[in-house]
Length: 378
Image (spheres, rainbow, N blue to C red):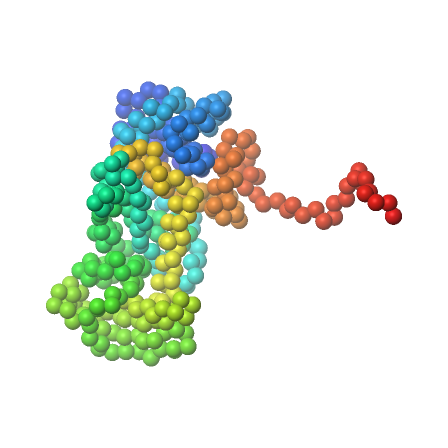
């Protein structure tokens, strides 16, 4: 909790009157209980309450002041605004991005590079009717814009599964000079033209039915996997109006996967191979989603309302970013998953967190135990 910005959290709580008519279980208590569930892989509210009550003498020192019960925690998740934890997560994200500003992500680039994608979490239709996705299924989508430096999510939007990915482009504040890397689900030329007008760059993959005319081309080194580097204009009756200026079309052959990839971008200054490598870095957001689903509790939920689901997801994002902050500030060499595993068994131990997360040399080659008797006498 030394890394928990209490003052900023209290500002978020007051902004939405989170502790209004609250006597014994504050928003801070709720956050700590839900963070405990994320760090220790608890499966239900009953598990959370049972484990926390077992260490009751240590709760006060951990920052939990209120009385913990299953109904109280369930009511807090149902009724207290999820925007409290969304705003708090954004504060942590701002802090983490400052710490990871000097990180490298595999491509030498002066500008900021973002990866945009979404992941879907399947739900039961009878329990989550507000998030209906198919005829017999519900789902929620976590739309994420991730800074490739440090793999920090800087924009997160939680919607029902029926919301198409491309709609999230309307909610993103476009940063001039930045690169936005996305897959074919985000191809909407009217929206992509907004990036060009905002002096930002995008890199995406072209669809197979793209109607265009080539206006010029540049020579490429085919030994690198490049096949062509063209300047094109769209020829379709609608797309030519939505995107009336030139685009850059790059063809690249991926030898490892035996696959031909066609990229579209509005950047004409970087070399073609760098554009292809930028798109390859988009895989980091897939690894981020995989990490969240494997190491945090977001595939099953402690409540069924929209508020409870969003509260749990935003607290999970806050825990991820808080661990990333601890890793950077303490200069710990372990991976985030290793840190999470260690914290899961040492949350209430009276030991400095840096000592708990340090890697010790366990080699004992020169160790001799003189008390050990010989099995055979020579």
